[in-house]
Image 1: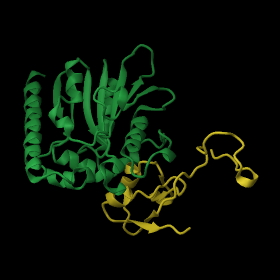
Image 2 (image 1 turned 90 degrees about the vertical axis):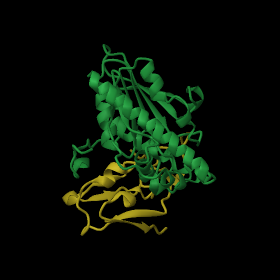
Image 3 (image 1 turned 90 degrees about the horizontal axis):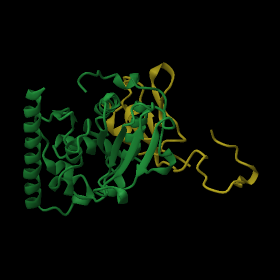
Image 4 (image 1 turned 45 degrees about the horizontal axis):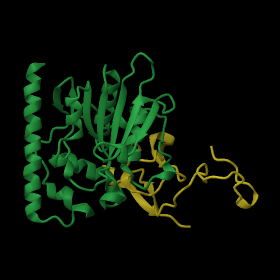
Length: 89
Length: 233
């Protein structure tokens, strides 16, 4: 539930910017090699932020807004299907 | 774990409860991973009356204590969960009476240790905690990349090593009966665990030797307890 950002990005309510999704810019985001992935879901299990979700045909993908690029999924993938790709800003 | 096949993560609940807010924890946080699965196994955080106690209020001053009240009013026993990130950054807990032991002595109905790396084991223990008729205590080891000094991608690996080196054995005690849930038949040398972290980089070889003796002694005691209490069942 991300609130709409008002014109000029002025936060009308005092307090933190908590409700706005991204808090941290990841250095790298995971990418799946679909030839190697066996759809076991280990990456989904071990993601601390719950950023990994199931997408079409049972493969997995990351929600860019929540991923912090910690790399646990890459370490834990048994088949080396995940690689951390550098994000470009 | 052996009861589950490789595809077991797919049968977990689909709903996500990320408490604390995912924006408020560091990358690779073990505590966030533990809490995500605690709430996944037990249900909505709003239905449970959660109460936090932070290290200063805690007895040992380690980790944060979370006590949850189960939903219905007739069972008033709280589930106490110690989210332990070893905030004192030492292995001092090897040399004192451990938290689960004191709770067993206090007569808790179900006491268990768990680790974020063995998540199905953790979920099993949480389900057992829900069934238990009496107060419950669960001690969860949650590696902390920033405090312990290792890369954020190693959180789960470090947890595996803590259990495989027998430094943090996983067991549960239901009504006085000990049971080692993850058995380490061929333990990994404890150097692997210690040298992967920056907080232990100054340990000398002699200190590591004495630590290993201490760990082996504690594990042998645990094995003895589990054998002795199994006969009584």
